[in-house]
Length: 436
Ligand SMILES: Cc1ncc(COP(=O)(O)O)c(C=O)c1O
Image (cartoon, rainbow, N blue to C red; front, top):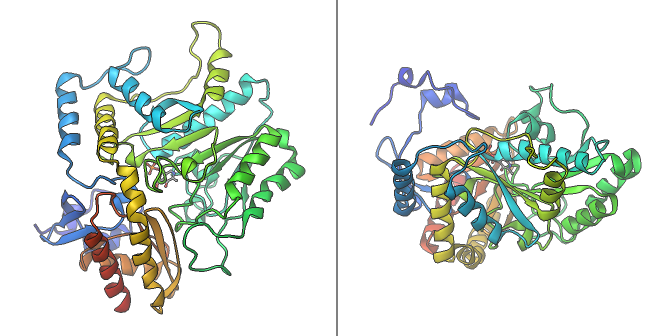
């Protein structure tokens, strides 16, 4: 299948160099297991589960059939004041795998919407407690929380925010946790827990009682897999408890088994008050996200409203539409039946061995990883990110799809990948990096 540049002009592609892409398009026309087919008929191994959302691989019949059947049976019903059984069943299944205290699930369409929704829940919670004066939010440098105005306000990546200046005020960023003096750390770095004391300093500077919530990705994913130092998340939890601040974990990438447990919260044994999630909730087969909250947050908000009144003035036309719920239910069933999260845990060592074997390459600056999530960061050549963009393209034509952020390639195999397929990913990475 060949495409002319003119055929491609109308679609304004997201987070893409449109002019470059349209001159040299890379279209995916098929997907099965851990492989894609490109428009020239080439086979491309998927090194990052699509965009970290397809841990069960591509083309799963069970998911497609569940969606098809659901669309025939009932394609849509308003989620406001009516609902569908699937939304309750999926919420129930998600609540079963979240930490014990987190049992209430609100559906959205994406990770970005989950962040906006979580921000509003935080505001509603404090207002319900008579603490509406908590107007400050804390985030972190190098954070990615999606692209809606809420997420951009919390973002710690300069390119994602410098153009968009009219965002939420009153957000302060803690320092990120990557330490240039501690490279090639596999798992959690030993040092750096004290970076969480940035939050304590904000409490001293602004008053802990003015801070509403802290948003962190347990592992900062999109910015290049920054694994939290030992003790860091625990310390954040302590400081939040001391000052009545809500702790929000953005589990959009880490959720649903990526770290070998259902959520990072369980992998690191730290329980937040609110968790955002998306991506692997439906294996990427339908757009969907969710926010799961503690009983305390749910009860505080709902019980503050007058009897029979709407408690939370928020929701989307597509808050849990039937087809997305059907996809989600099918996916959660497969996770159970195939013990997918245990499989991810079992494959992790093999994957990290392979990834860290690339450290001998001259072009590699750092490697990080945990579970089935890792990053190979390259020494920049020219402008920051220029080399990453080039390597991403070269890799594609060498038969591997990988997401790069700047000069860091983020590797996240599907949980269904065989060891031989992990080898194939590492071999392709090595061959491509040796050629630059
Ligand atoms: C941690 C995190 N939060 C939020 C988002 C935004 O999700 P979406 O692209 O579905 O809006 C992402 C996307 O990669 C993410 O990694």
